[in-house]
Image 1 (cartoon, rainbow, N blue to C red):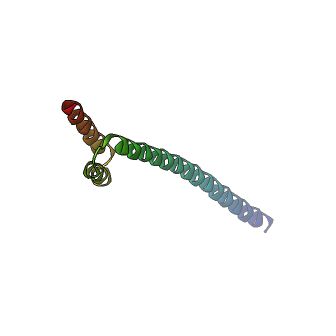
Image 2 (cartoon, rainbow, N blue to C red):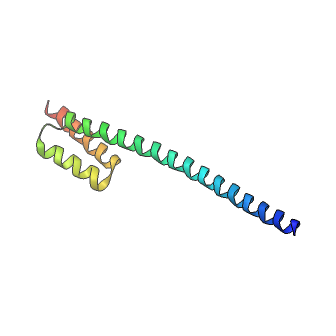
Length: 91
């Protein structure tokens, strides 16, 4: 009987240890995702500032934001580069 109780106790302990390890892994993953999110938000804020700085008309700003939302950061940066090139040609 003592052997059975010890065995159950060890099983419970190993289950708890395993659960604790899984919780720690999840916490690490949550921290990693939070850091990635903060980085993403910072990039978006920088890009929005660039849109406000580069675009000379409200229509350009709207187009840049629309591209950012629907096509992503890379496409928006490409659009902003094309706006800068047009501005330099007109200058």
